[in-house]
Image 1 (cartoon, rainbow, N blue to C red):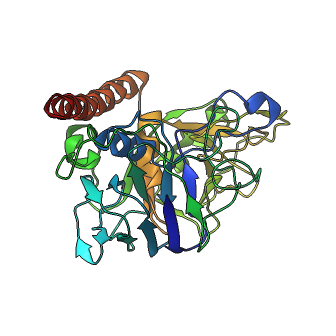
Image 2 (cartoon, rainbow, N blue to C red; image 1 turned 180 degrees about the horizontal axis):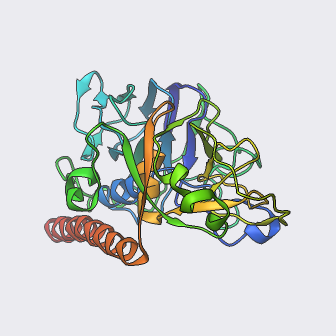
Length: 331
């Protein structure tokens, strides 16, 4: 059991989401940084899709009521266990009564607390993710509150889960050859032209050529971008169409909206581009006020990045499984 002893708003239970229900108006939800969930779960010996805590407002403190193997992923900061600084992206063993504290990361937006066995909350439509807009899933369909107690899954064999010291190279370093960098500190996000790209002047250069800023009106549903408005060359009447995370729409005001994890299931705004799936985790770690530029990508590049990410995840998973087998053999 985990007890929440201090928290901020909008911290929730998430997993990799609930796909397959958009046709009935249910968004997929799930972690804003799914790669951090996959790696964190692998470090503690879980299947990669088990439920975790997604932390986006800090500080948060939680108490373990039982011996627990855990890892904090996603963050570029250092968690504290009973005041002792630990490494992120590394598995540790906590004893009953110990307190884990996460402070505001230096640069990134979110952190994930992954525990061996996963978080034992009810599965709704095949997922334990919190849908804040729907008020279901996760822990009572709402953000975490002080005093909440969340059960840990019983599937973890504590004799065969990776113990303290199993760590992963964090993704931006491990995937450095596949992560574009800018000279001015702006976050470069790769995207593909979408259905209504041709409606915008000069092949959309006003979109691709400028630096956007993530507005304070952004949330898990979508990132609203501030910058010089972009307008279609002609007014068109559009029917509502299906929308998924990563789609970039342009409302009448001309400032784009990037659909994120709690993306709307349908909408009628023109679609100028779509973020490639393997860059969504990077965008999910961008803070309010961050500067971003979109880089026009190709399907071939998107596939290459996807293969690199899959190989990285597999190396971490395979290492964790090897450690589990060795621990079982020694038990």
